[in-house]
Image (cartoon, helix red, strand yellow):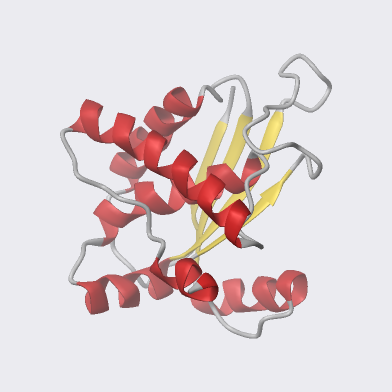
Length: 168
């Protein structure tokens, strides 16, 4: 179905056509092509407000996901023939992502597919509120990125260090 990809920020320069290609490839790997998906690139201030409103955290972040179907079991897709064949929306905090890339010595265009993978996992029911949920989500992200890597000849891995540190 439809991919709505919007760049609503002007701070970070990145390859929007590559991101669109990567998202469509990830949708194919996830087997979610029959669902609508929104991916919106935003400024830190906008994401800070959303993070504060919805998660109670007054700070910018890299990715926020808002699933259309809140009660999905991890990995279970909604019925694509239902009235709402929509996965939800992923919001990317581009300046935050760029700062993290500078600290990690990585590239924004390289990291974006990893963050979208993380976001789609949230849209299909995966969470990381406990160590067990974290491990389940990490496995799904790893499996998806392994397939992505085969197709694109890349070597991407889940960005887990921030979440993983909560459990060790």
